Image (cartoon, rainbow, N blue to C red; front, side):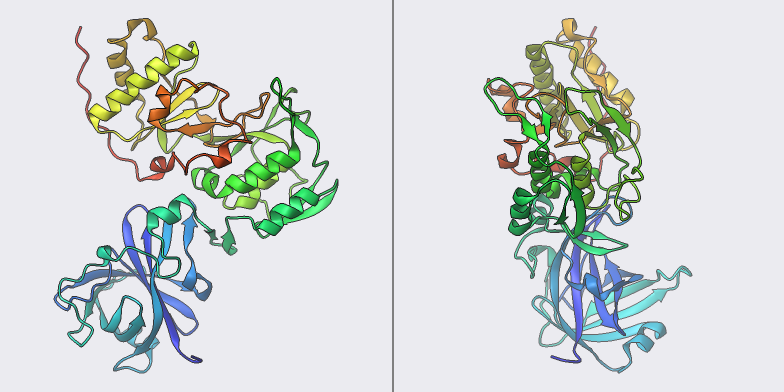
Length: 444
């Protein structure tokens, strides 16, 4: 109804899980971070922290915020309308440090009270949140027992695995999925046409230019196909590169030619692309359109172990031994097939010493492979990046069980096959890194 104030509670998994409680006041969303979430239990007192106001456009945002401050997945955990109780001027009540609000949501109903307990001086004051004992109170009510979005019906994990939108602090919500019409438009593009995709206009030159020579018995791969792959995979790729400076390798003559590095946008880039620290899907599509056939990222969020320089069968042996070691240690790790097998281990700080110690332990089992399993370089191929080689192979995350598949080869996955694979097998790499356990010294 006209004049009603809106509220939203977003379940937000950033560095730590918390709930963002937001009330519409004077045209903005006045916001508190509530680490344990609101409760209908009147005996519960929740710590809440007053944070910056958000624009009203954020009221129905559900999707992914790129890495950095506040980066993570967001669902609309609850939403509805609210009205002030006691003080008819909610802005004055917030300023005074005590706000009473009647909520009319799908999960939260009844009267909540927010009370400031300490001023921090930075505007992020400490508050206390509670529910009054009224007809909507429920003893023992736990928000974590009600995990689904009221907007989409999905859980946080489901949104992270297949997000629809990304939040850009400068431009607001941007779509992460291309529409069917945008993909149909791609099929119709001719040389020099402008393609509107992910909310941006991109000029496409020579869409049928061959970028990847064929493998025996196959057709060559064109720029149009690379654009289609990038557009379809952008929702999965973006969380792995967002907020990190991309180092692109461009091949103007296709994968059979010489490549050069691109670390900042060229003068011919569209005006909205001011940096290769990517924050939106359209930037990846732009990269594909200018023959960036490989996308490299800094190896900053995980320790990367490269198993190159060995015959494929030996790489598989080493990878399986790593798999067994991680299972024994209870360590999260994921494997990826690029030009060779890579293993990524989310870790806090510099894990070079730990990976070297792990390599020594494994060398005690297979001494003939002792000099392999080396740390990756300063930049590595991003998950799902194409590789400048015949057939358009892709740097593809694999399940640990696929190491036992006799059909697994270095060129098993291409831009024509990866979009139809399982959901993101590298999502665990995006989880907050954990300290790695101590390793026992290998027996001599």
